[in-house]
Image 1 (cartoon, helix red, strand yellow):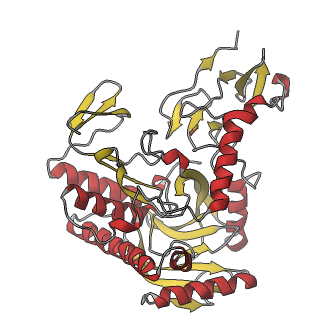
Image 2 (cartoon, protein in one colour):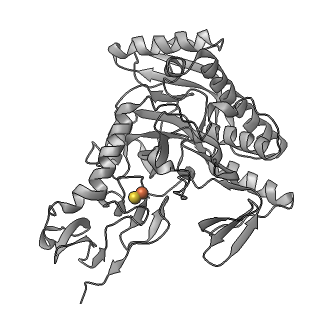
Image 3 (spheres, protein in one colour):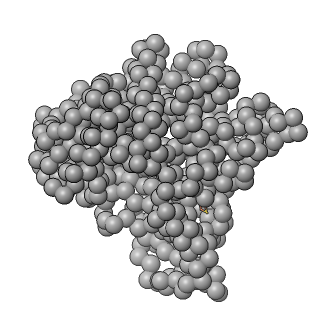
Length: 446
Ligand code: FES
């Protein structure tokens, strides 16, 4: 039952990225915030144009988007956001009634936002590319990018080399560390979703709470049914969740309002978060002309990826793009989010150095079946997973990206990196960027 569905995203297509515009006006300017909003509104329009012109059947539908609170003390922040958005000339509304099956204290509503089925949209895009004589190669992992003297490039994969004039690094978390240094300015966040059949009539609209604990709601179609997607439980990848059982918390939330509901799917996903909360779109590094990047979309990748695609295409075609300056990937503006920056430096130092010197918490015998932990054998740290039958899987728990000490994720049975979010299955196979090499594996079963 617990399957990955929906392409690891809630697929809300919206310019309401939480409570964001008051922050943008204060940290940048009104003009900056207005252009950011306009860029995202244009992305919604552009996605609709693509859906129509390419005749993609992807359940695209316009919906109102709400950022809401159930907490009285948070209402002033929602009202501030309403004022901020109105000051940009964009119509929004403060409301106290929504379609949600519970009372709220207030919400900001953006009309004419949208949702779709992301995989159906993606398949439609792929068909469209192929029908226009484009080629798509999947399961071909890029492992290196070589710059030639004439500023053309060679992308290395395991078995091939591809020579090219332009390169777009759209690998979610950039895997090229130097130059670029994206690992110093981004981290990954994990969040969880369940899809339920509510066995009851559902509401319209897309919703997200404005502050912790974050819950996100949207409906989706499956066959003739309308399902409800409930998300939440965000935490930094590789760090413990504040919940013992995040899926259980989401299910409990669902059953409060839909006691007869059936949980059909569960999945979790990772998002790249830049330290100043603005995506990186544009040139990868000043040392690499004609290499471009789009990353750091926070939780709003459906709209931000469209913005990124248009900016990068314009750059390659030598066309001016009004929104390019907002997302400059080479920006040097001091990072306002000092707390997050400090956290990242401290956590990286711990995982790279100090945690490796600490004693392991458990001994081999203390590890339960179907669980994992780091232990020490002959002064060496070994990552152990015992499967439900007691079979042992042992890995070297050092991340193949930049060498941080990994931590055990008992929900997914994976080794996750607290530094930049790479992940490995219990056999040590790399399953998530920015690392792309597997862990060393030991055979301890004899
Ligand atoms: S993801 Fe960077 S060190 Fe692990």
